Image (cartoon, helix red, strand yellow):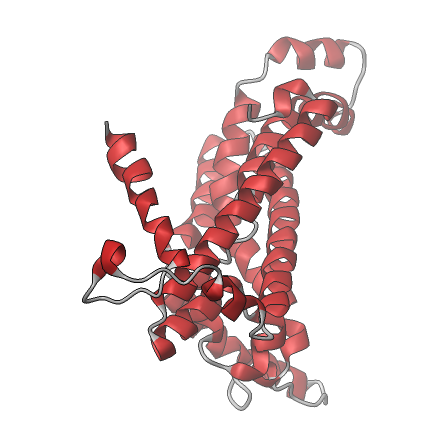
Length: 282
């Protein structure tokens, strides 16, 4: 019942994407306008830019997070001192609870042009300071670094729990055969982790057309200089909705995101099933 009420019934709102929505008339009373809301988005000149940025940033986030999460989970698994292991895991997990607004303030302390810590270091080395908030090309890298810092601890918990559940007989047999720790990781741990990696990757791919609005807007805001590399679908829709109050267009873009994500998930799941049947979602 909860799924029907909170997941399926709200889908009636999809019709907003095909209407000239008026608040006073409501969803049912607003006149139909066909595909004009979609036309507005795709002819705005920004559709390709925001779609490209959304996909590319998410691909980088998925790849970087998967590598960092698997790497640190393997490292933590090799720590035998339980107290030291828990401290490290807690420190890594702490950024997950921090708001992106707080992270943006911390980031500004590092990247601010005149008083930022990084520019001070560069100047102490005799180098020219960088206008970080005026250089769009560096921001995909900055966003990836911050995304890794925030989400690595969360992913490590999942991977570490999976590793702990592996049958120890595999490692005991490998030790008897003379396998080193590195060989055990390469030939036992990583192959056993592949199904988990594939499932988590597929879940992430399901939102590949959705930008992390809290992250992007919290760090970039309305800085138009950075839009060429950081403006994603969600931030574009937010600005359009705030400036023009066009609910129909925002509904159309939301439907576009959902349909494209659904297609990508189906395609990715089929590829995963061909590679390993236990790595597919369905």
